[in-house]
Image (cartoon, rainbow, N blue to C red; front, side, top):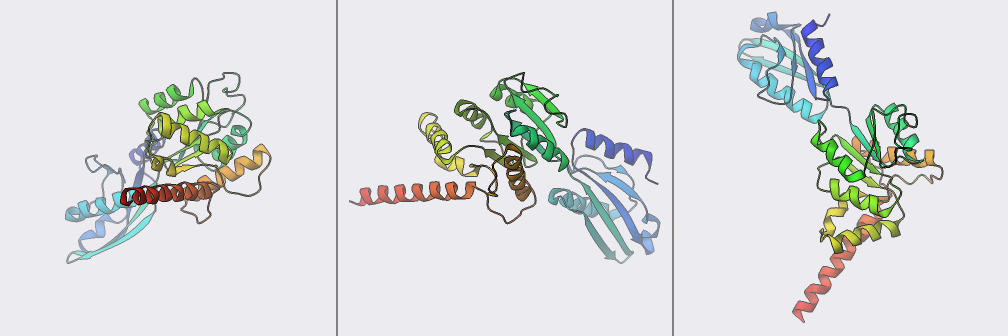
Length: 286
């Protein structure tokens, strides 16, 4: 049975949305025979003391380093060690942070998207500037529903306990260009795992070109935006569109091979920049 202090540490990590690992010595002989069965909860930060005791003597630091690498890789690992004092094996069970999906826009697509994402074990936040849309009755499965202006609300999330990082997925399904622009300006520089924006290619080009022109944002910054959003499955209804969006998000999460709808427009933008650069070089030579 797991010791109470280890269970408490794991539950606290879930509550605080922290990545940790339960490290267990599964076998040992020689000097390490007494360590078999011992466990500890380990955090990715080297300066944070583990909870529990592994009793591995001088090999402890090496085991902790390997455990932290497993946490970074978000995969369980089984390590085997041997030296003059004997052999031992360690299983690292990684408890990764749950991926966090932030849905900007609480319209008809957001409802099934929030539900599907929660089924896929995402933490889900929904924001909209319209209180009649952003309320829990419309999103009963969401972890958080916030009514407020898009950009300040996203900024407030960042200033709180949330970190917009490689475990964060942002979907922009707002009702208009200006809201898309506000959201992009707020999150474009964040190292999120996924940033997708709904809309036709014409609408997306208009938004990108406006920001390039008026905000002087380099065109290359938009290459990471998944737009048009989703994987092409011929979706028509809001629920079907939500499925195609979530399929692309899972593809990114799991390093899947399927290309999204955004691939074509991204390649077109890159090719246009290459042609423009070539023309500029030619003009200089001339």
